[in-house]
Image (cartoon, rainbow, N blue to C red; front, side):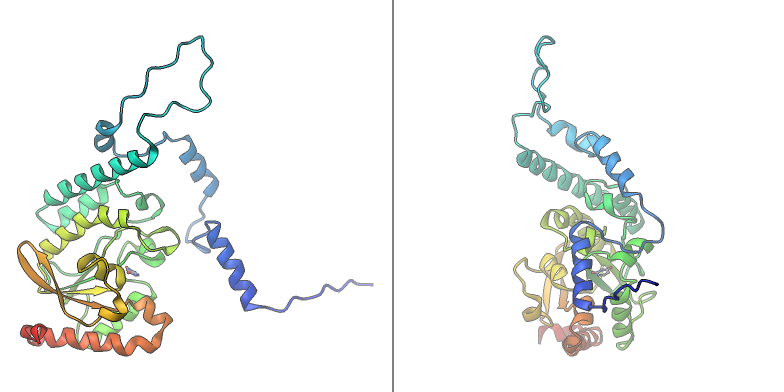
Length: 300
Ligand code: URA
């Protein structure tokens, strides 16, 4: 007699729970273009020296290791630690990395040089889990600069900003006010590498990328900036800004001594989740269009 197996009905809630559980365990890409040997990557990390850092930046900040124990005594279980604790040491490293980012960004006099400098910068740990550096797209110089949060999975795979679902929606919305990325605006993000699992970039990661983003703005010389989403608005305008309350209100950013108008708006990823708010985003785009026709309109 043939055995019959009970079939389990598809339960979307259980399915969502299983996916969330996998994400908590570190599974970020359920389907990548090429297989990833996570065991090999972990073995490489374990085999690497404790810090994988640009030596020029960190070597001089490392306190000297204490004298080695005499050969007759048993080796200590864990390597001797410098007198400075881990958190303080990481803090010092971060300060040195930000200073290095500032130095490298300031040395660039073209956007191509800046792109190369970002590609070569390994002070931000996000790049270790990213496939590509996502620097920017669109013409230089440009009257309009659009700045988002961070690359997502599609951007990470292609190395270009805003090419996934939310980017396509943004392009579509901008097309209704007559703007196309190939000719009308420069587009970039606050950070250049995809945070694992698409989490929000943390303050340290933003601080490490900011010298390059700031220089990017100086070199593109926009007449106006559209800050897309809370993180972009907080970084460009005010760390305490609440995007749902402050969107659509003109603010400004000091760029090399001149005030560039900045318009904060809702992130398209948020609009995909909450389509009812597209109406607000559309109002913001009309404000942008009004500014392009009449720059004095920001003062109204
Ligand atoms: N979201 C962003 O903020 N930037 C991108 O490039 C893609 C999605």
